[in-house]
Image 1: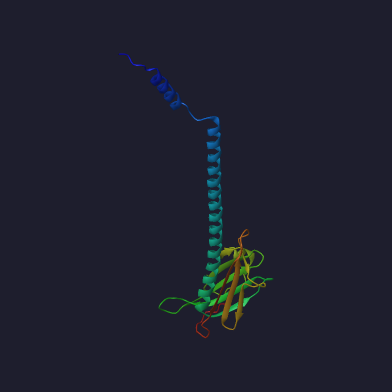
Image 2: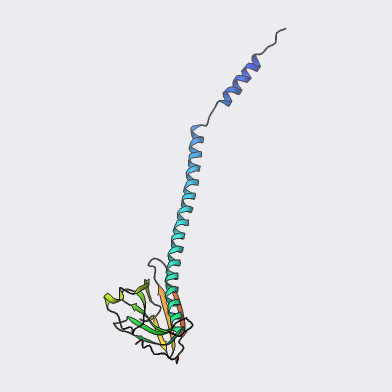
Length: 198
């Protein structure tokens, strides 16, 4: 009894031939095109995230620098018995305060903030002696609090009314919107002490 196996052999040969077929050139081109779209979208998202991150870091640093100046001035004026605001050169401003120490025994020191309208910078110094308007060489020895600031309006970052001092600055970043920082403080006028700061 012999069986006819011709049909099954032909079917098996077709199955094997169908299993061994790979991708056609058209299918490969479509897959490559889809992959390039996915890579382009992912690359765009990564580029956007990096750009946004740089912007946030830059604006945060700018805001932090402006807040440092405001905090330094406000703390100094709140702990001062009096202060003097002057404009030594052009639109430059010198703010000098006589500040009480934080120790158990009351001691006084002089603190000063200098705003250069030409450089858009704010410097700080403290001393046991009176502080006069600095020369360019002298201000280089002061502590630079921030660069790239300008008055929020007008030509002055500091303004005084009686024993109240206001500070209003714009932190500049060049490529981004300026950050406006405004604060004020009142000195403790009338406190006694022997140190003369201005």
